[in-house]
Each structure stands twice: as structure tokens, then as C-alpha cells.
Length: 136
Ligand SMILES: [Zn+2]
Image (cartoon, rainbow, N blue to C red; front, side):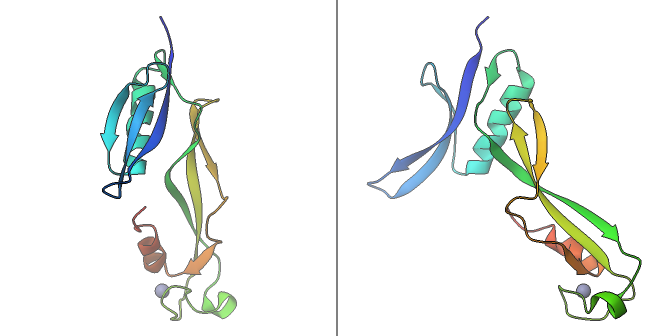
């Protein structure tokens, strides 16, 4: 059984100034998925590979989304200053660390990096939780 390489590619329609994304099987050129959003094409490609790992693989690295770690510090605003989100006093400070999840096609598993992420944020638990709801 053959194994096929997949890749997400952007298609641009210069006449109508539109773009969209396809999951393409490189050997045949066949376009298997056709969506408007890059991350959606990536998710679809990933799920195709996860479902049929003997059939599909990719050499593309891509972002799968954000991952967060929220931890409680042992101090409040007296040590860390006001909440970095709302600017108010906090009895207990929490620290939010943002990471980006990558699909690693060589190891065929997810990996995580801090590259390109915001630095650690200190604040109320509720305020930090709101930061994790941002659209991607
Ligand atoms: Zn706050």
C-alpha cells in the first residue's frame, strides 16, 4: 500500500481578490478539502493523518492552537503588583503561561513551544481565564 504526502496550500483568486485553503495530495495533485480558513484546513489534514496513518503523512509543521498553563503563586499584589489584566489589587496572584501546540510530522505527535508567545502574565484567576478565550 502506498503512502501519500499531504500539504495545506493557499489558493488565491486574483480576479476576485479571494483566498482559500486546500488539503492537497502532492503525488496526484488532488485537492481533498477546500475551506476558507487556514487552521480549519490544517485540522482536517491532521484528522485525516490520525485516522489513516498508514496512508497519509505530511512534512509540514503547523500550529494546532494555543495551550495554557495556569498556576497559583504563593503571593498577591503586595509582591507582584496589580493584576496585569484589570489593574486591580489581588489577594492571590495567578500566573498564565501561553504555549503553542505544533504537530510534529517526524515524531507523529504534538509538541509544544513558547516561541512567538506572550511572556507570562500575572493576575486574577478569572482575568487570566478570559485571555485563554481569544479567537485564533
Ligand atoms: Zn484582574
